[in-house]
Amino acid sequence: MAEQKVHYPWFKKEDIDGFFSLFQNNLANFVLIAVALIGMGYPTSIVYGRVIPGAAVSVLFGNVYYAYMANRLAQKEGRSDVTALSYGISTPVMFVYLFGVMAPALAFTGDPEIAWRIGLAACFFGGVVEVVGSFVGNWVRKTLPRASMLGALAGVAFTFIGGELFFRVYEMPMIGMIVLAIIIVGLIAKKTMPFRLPASLFAIIIGTVLAYSLREVDFSQIAEGMSTVGIYPFLPTLGFIEGFQFLAGPMVGLIAILLPISIYNFIETMNNVEAMASAGDDYSAKECMLVDGCGIMLGSLFGGVFPTTVYIASVGSKWMNAGRGYSILNGGVFMIASLFGIVAAISKIIPVPVIAPILVFVGISMVAQTFAAVPQRHFPAVVIAMFPYLGNYVMTRFNNAAGEVVAGISSGIVPLGQGAMFAGLIWGAIVVYIIDNEFNKAAYTALIAAALAATGFMHAPKLTLFYDYKFVAGYVIMAIMFFVFSRTNPEENVAVMAD
Image (cartoon, rainbow, N blue to C red):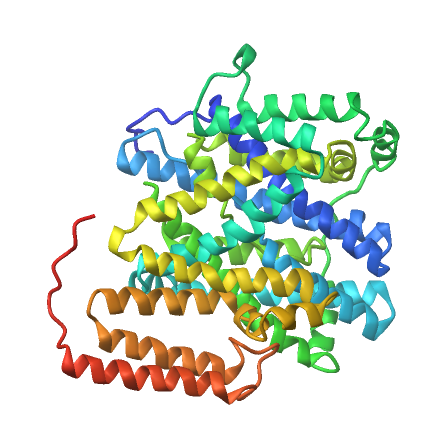
């Protein structure tokens, strides 16, 4: 066995901050899953006994492997400041699986057990797509401009993570604002907390004590949380096989939802790997996508119905100077918490406004890192790549409940939000190519956008041919225009502007 070049610790103090950041991110998703599925009509025996444990198996697998990858990178580069990739359930994908797979499966079958098996098949399918995507991931990563990839990711960070959780801070202002101030002082300004406690741990303690002391939360929440504690063993299952019979038969229409969201998921992994590379830790996109795909399939073999991915929180953990210990701790704690029903208990005992500021920090760090990682001349590309996710946020949060209001703001919000990741990547790349006087590349990118729009990957609610030809025509006309510009403005070695 080769001798290690550097001492890379299993755990260090900064891993505590990284753990709380990643843990509460995963915890929030686990809670949303439980609340949503039980609200749909799935029994607690399936939710707490199969779905949550299955997701925990996937989370453990990925976190342990990424800790291994971090050590390997540390030894390869001879440094001890490597941060392991964060890993967990993808939030946007989770919502699609909740309301695009699990809800219609239950409505169609009327049987939670069969619907759950359909969910297993859908999850396994997502893992297969991620594994297949791994063979093109590094090529795509090298081909797409960094501003395009990170800009699309920053759109997610700004809207769904930083922005939405900032709203939650103000649900309990006396608690949320104080906790956010502690997070800013401790994690952004990097000031020492009392008793030298990690900032996130200190913030959670102060916030929780204040919430109960000021009676913002009733003490009955503690009893309600403790009532969920029990034994929920990890049971292997081949239920996905029966589920595939439905996906290949009466519910084949779900493939039109699963294919684009699965492609989105592997792009999210790829983008997050690129974000970490920009922060100093360069991992293999191909290997990470393989790990994600295997983790997804493994989770489905233990009851999980939600795909996992490399998390956007990775850069936040890097900013916290976390190592690999936070990743291992997160996987182990979720295994134990799922086994004994502690996930549900914690989610009821600790108020969301206490947890929210840590996610606000993750959003801040991701957006800031994006601008720090690209040339100044590409800043406009980053900004335009973020816009589609503003449309996606409005669409997913308000369109079903208030469609007329959304349409009254603009009829373009919903189509822009459909396939937002693709739209962000496309527009970010086009702007980079225009800035760099590479109009031929801009034209080809516009043609790719036309193909995506023509097949329903963008600007359509499902995979279908020419859902709205106007979007296709718009991209084709743009491509023609760019080809004309490429003839009148020959591509040259453009001098890099001062940044």
